Image (cartoon, rainbow, N blue to C red; front, side, top):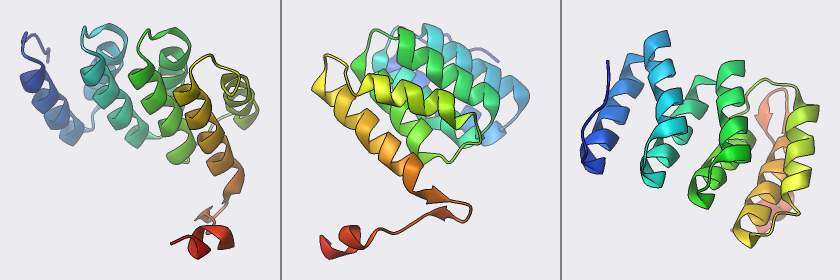
Length: 138
């Protein structure tokens, strides 16, 4: 399985189809797309879908994207994925990274990191807690 189209819309559709496979090979392809696709939008999609795998390898791929991707769009999605997915990981490592990202030069990344960190901190064993202030602002 390889995605070699030069058209981003076809690569995006292929990524969505790969998601349905949910196999180890599909996971490897998504990781490769996250690292190497020329389009930040396609890498963003790969990060979003990788979060659905909820495993340590997905966390590693997302962490690598946060640290190394040139696109703030991709970094944003990888940060959100770590905060929202409820992945089981060494929270200290993720929390430290999210703390550091709150000092990023880009306000978009800083805000995303702050939200992801708050989300992680508000989780409990049953999932995301509803915070009363959230309900009040709806």
